[in-house]
Image (cartoon, rainbow, N blue to C red; front, side, top):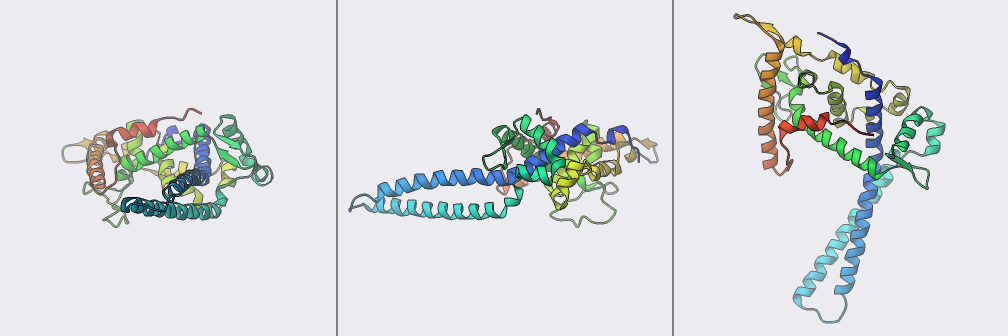
Length: 297
């Protein structure tokens, strides 16, 4: 395989990935807070409606039906609130207290301070870090990139080069040596940062949080060493060159053909999923631009 300096992960990218990983970590709790607030507002509104409909002794059949409907809505909202509060209790692990950082996770302090300075995070009255409105905007961009990765790049994770087919996770047993991962090669051919693609792939599978020491390794600067190694181990465009009866077929021609087939198949799969009720509302051919968009801290 051919390697180049472009397959070395620089410190700037390590910092960016660290910020995004921490942001995703905090948002797992903060999204529940937002949901709780919305439900509390909905419950207050429904209580007012039910109270108003309950006034008076005589109600028409239609009014009685409306009252029962609103009561049902209120009960469902209250049940949902109970579930959210339980989930918040179970997800306390996603909260970080500033005192804990200073004591046990001091190596993360510089990264968290940077996020504070850029108004991505703030410290609440309870001394816990909270994401800001700006943090929510960056998280929304991250979610868009994760969705775009799944729509555009995931299809190139399993390619049978010999038979010219793409593996389908819903139908194929994706094991054995027949499959080649071409996500990095596709990214490099398209001029997209391959580290960003692998980062999004690992995030979509929750790979980083599987490591119980991820915070320690993030602070130490070694958490993304595996990501760097994955990129270095992947097939490069030049590796796809081969010789047939006519002569040498270069890797660029091969990847160009694979790209065309993959984008066409991705479109078909997305249309199928939209038909099953999943409304993506995006064009797969534009997804690469979403992934390539940089963060302006």
